[in-house]
Image (cartoon, rainbow, N blue to C red; front, side, top):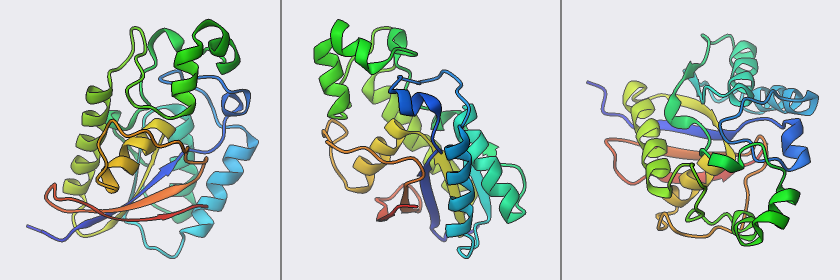
Length: 202
């Protein structure tokens, strides 16, 4: 059995039109725009010398498309989709422009801007369930790819969970920051121990 740690490069997907328009995407499938596809190509170029063994992705289209562009550029097998990497489910607010949310639910809107994980989304996903499934997914990937480097393509709120975990912050911590499209966070995981971490952007 290989007990070597797995290096995970966890990266936010490329840009979509809904990112530009400020619409909450959640589990709604939205394609990359031309900028997002270019960002995926640039990501592949920036990380070409790392020697990744595999690419894993959220099954949502914007993430999967980013992962496919990168895997193709590197000549790797098609990306493996993991449901645990999906964006947080925003319930009834999915598909709502933030400008509308700022009028109908101003307090929630402000907490979203602060990246407060304790936000409550009616009919959506709770903080603990969301964080648990994200971290379980990362450890599953690490268990399946011991001793190698894996690119993981996912979403903004997932990146928040990973940022807190890597920094050994409480899962309730308010970050007051947002990872950009194409921005990456490196983790080293082994046997569910605390990760080592470094950060980089595209």
